[in-house]
Amino acid sequence: MGLDTCDDAGIYRIQDDLALIQTVDFFTPVVDDPYSFGQIAAANALSDIYAMGGNPLTAMNIICFPIKRMDISVLQEILKGGLDKLKEAETLLVGGHSVEDEELKYGLSVTGTIHPDHILTNKGARVGDQLILTKPIGTGIINTAIKGNLVKEDLIHEVTAIMASLNRTAAQELKAFDIHACTDVTGFGLLGHACEMIEGKEMGLVIYPSRVPFIREVLNFARMGIVPAGTHRNRDFRNEYLLGLEKIEPAIVDILFDPQTSGGLLIAVGKEQSEDLGTKLVEKGLKNASLIGEFVPEPKGKILIESLG
Image (cartoon, rainbow, N blue to C red; front, side, top):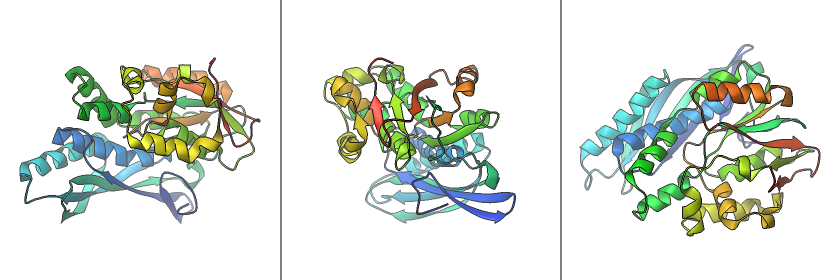
């Protein structure tokens, strides 16, 4: 599994009962605090392993740093944040590479393992499956508002904690259920990644916006027009796959397309297990885990945004 799919990581079978999962991700800072940025970047990179159903084993740092105009203590804090998050994930840092760059960037390449029979892809959903989201959305909009000095300190801490939280707990709980598909919500936004789950398939998806968990205050910022440029690019790219947007408040549509940093998992599970899984996730501390949609026979290859959920 590799370049010919839109999945979260590449997978290479090395023996009948063992395969490697490999992924890489890095980006510019999304928060001002270097330590928090390191944690967020690490959690984001690890997420692709969890989304495929695997266990991360090792990681390597990727660093672009403007050494001539930024103090080395900033880099040290970033690396400490990343290392602490790797320790939380029980993942070993084995090296990395750095280059001098005018723009600070940080992330990791991560290698994990999985049994070839237990791989979770983003294309395995079945008609009747329920769609569960494990984290609230809106990080792109909140981060844009932070750049405009419009966000209070308590919300900054809340959003930072959401982005820095691992998808590890959710991934561990999935192993006890019959999960048909999984992906994580990142730069393409909730609807962009949901489109990947039904693209080219003989089924559709209904999503209920009223059930989608939003980060607090994000709707107010969206109504003010404070949205990142990626939101509009996401909508333009996937607009033809969506039905019913005209019935939804434009600000809510913006949130549904909002590019996420280190977002939650999107999980397709059989209807008979969906309630139990949702309850288990909440019991394990994922208080925002919500059933947000259902895979349906029609409209094929489309997502219907249903205002009444």
